[in-house]
Image (tube, rainbow, N blue to C red; front, side, top):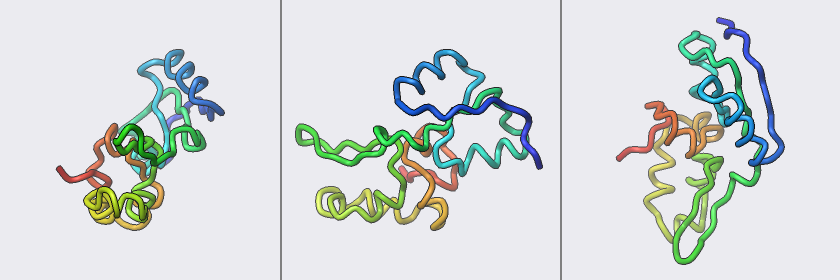
Length: 127
């Protein structure tokens, strides 16, 4: 199926993305990996008037240790978590669980932020 018409934005900065979300409010959806939103739009289960593509915001894709805590950026893919030597050493349960999410395609494109926000069972982190 073909999704309903929508306005598409690809912000270059996090500040620009925040501005677009504030401007378009609840009529906007964020697009990252797209494994949940795109199929829902094709079936017209989701019909946002505005799509804000944050997939290229590198400021949201990070894995680091801060003040003795591990910080994961929302754009970090399941595959990046699964294959992280740092996480295997420091927090081995995260890579193990990431390797069980969906299939290879979902792990390569799906993000931890998308899983937490959208809660699609195909990309859901087990409790």
